[in-house]
Image 1: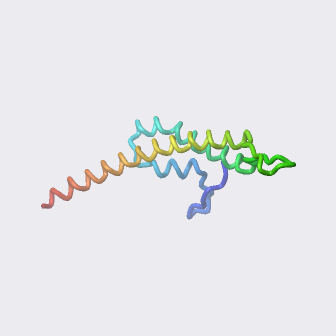
Image 2: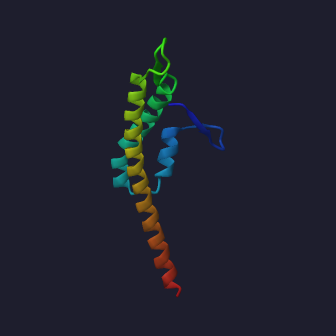
Image 3: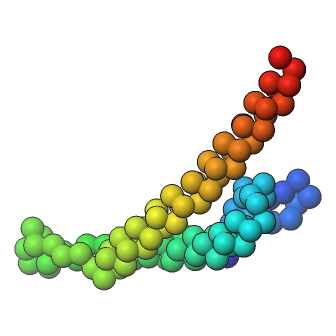
Length: 113
């Protein structure tokens, strides 16, 4: 876990804390379900940051036109795909919350009409 952001109090907010804050308005049952997914997203982000430090292409020393992807490139691609799938799920959860909040707002506005 790396430093993500500083709160007004000066405390360091981790990426996990930040994601949990984003999902603070989610139903408690859904929070229980997405909690492990948030942990997975944070883990994947950390793995991808480490993999970015490694070379993704190996160039033949005598013929630079011959190139191969490295194991790090393959792992990065796999992590990236898993990350994107997890983020899609989390975004859909947020959209559901926003939609229900908008529906509630519309109901309250209709009371005044």
